[in-house]
Length: 183
Image 1 (cartoon, rainbow, N blue to C red):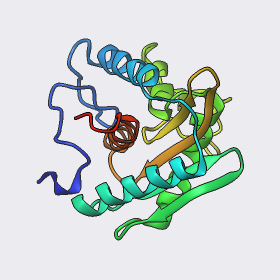
Image 2: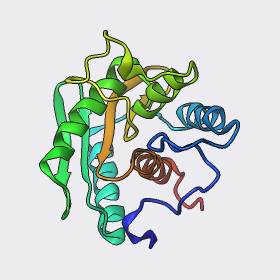
Image 3: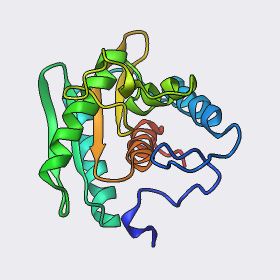
């Protein structure tokens, strides 16, 4: 069953795609987890080779798991890496553009933007100033942070439920940033 998901399902976590009641404290716990990921996942520098290696790792993970995803790494207006795996659709391109605009604008993961808005009981999409034609506060886009510099690019995955898109990006970032020889 997990072949079509990025990770095993977290049955106790917050699911932003669900309209059902959520476990108490699960929204706050997910926000704290993502904020910790932002602090953890920092590059010493980010080169074109780093972009290629990160993109190819995401392709490898997607192909191994049979994931119907599209992957994008963008720095400013320059697309550094972009690919669609079998099963991805043209809609994934729309979602990539909208999610990466959100991550770039707020300089935090796109999932975190949406979750923080829910803390007040609403959705960022319900605000007139949030242009849903340009932005999407859904999981899957993560800024590429360089220590001492900040966000310099975005890495985005689209095709899975939003928390799974986010988690796949985080998994790849952790693998790329893991010191050689460390397990």
